[in-house]
Image: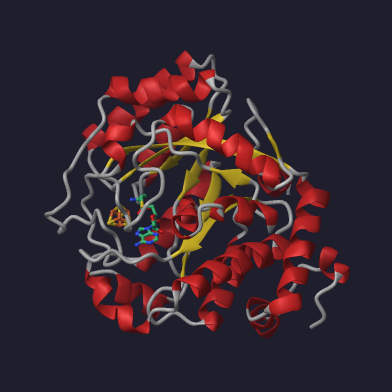
Amino acid sequence: MKISSKLLNKTDFTKAEIVELLNADGDSCSKLFAVADEIKREYIGSKVYFRGLIEFSNICSKDCFYCGIRKSNTNVHRYNLSDNEILDAARFAYENNYGSLVLQSGEIGNDQFAGRIENLLKKIKALSDDKLGITLSVGEQPRDVYKRWFDAGAHRYLLRIETSIRQLYRRLHPDGHSFENRLKCLKTLQDIGYQTGTGVMIGLPHQTVEDLADDLLFMQSFNIDMAGMGPYLEHEETPLYAHNDVLWPIEKRFSMALKMIAVLRIMMKDINIASATALQAIDPLGREKGVKVGANVIMPNITPGMYRNDYSLYQNKPCTDEEPAQCRGCLDARLALADSDIGYGEWGDSKHYFRRMKK
Ligand code: SAH
Ligand code: SF4
């Protein structure tokens, strides 16, 4: 398939065509990136929106084989921010005009947790005069909990499917973790009215380019509003570390992640795509590179600095020794390099969501 501006209006790709795009290198790869950038500017503009990321707790009841904060990793120092610490971070996001924030943590499924989040959502709405947009990313929950949180003011939810290939999902999780339930949760979120985001890890052991093409087709057929995809990064205190012998080199995981962003932008022209922090763990300018090839959302970390080292999903997470205020100056400068304006104070909602809801 010729990579050209003809892709500007095309959305229906076969799996073989997607594989071809994901395998692009040299000049074809540069062309792919340029087309994705052009599509982004034409369909949703050149602004980048911030979501201040609060990683409020690393306590998790699950045991995903790839994740550094999985329940069975006894080397992790567990923390749980106090409500005041979370509200201070939210105030920081509001005062610095970030527009939105993301509350993320390990997965806890009990009433106390559900009530705490509900209460925090209401307080964050109040302290920001309803002006801060709020995304949640706290895993699989029952429908009534998702609904309570929606009613309390959360309007976006991120729940990565991790991989759309069932067999691979099985290999990445212990018994009791269920692909079907994750899928069901995503459907419920859409049904309740959330702007619904999902995504995958790229370069997982035993994952193929064909699998990644299927992942993109999955996101398209699921009609998602937002995506967050990043390279898989190994953590030596996890079971998946034993599979490092079949890992793609880090450069390949990085470039494949950029190509995944670019191809998804071409396939789903008006969704929001986040440039994952994991990109920055590989290349200091990784997230800005994501923005140049189709991403339009960045999630600056606003977790208080002293906790950051303990939220180690993977090793070499960037900026773990910085405080929120340092991150902002740094990002302004870098995004200017990526020829982008920042949508300060704006929610930057997914345009796709509103089109989907109208139908
Ligand atoms: N507990 C929630 C949210 C926190 S984890 C959940 O799992 O949905 C957020 C994301 O971190 C996960 O969806 C996963 O895609 C990513 N992640 C975990 N371990 C990772 C690793 N080793 N490399 C790259 N991303 C990882
Ligand atoms: Fe817990 Fe999320 Fe890590 Fe899985 S990926 S172990 S649910 S924090």
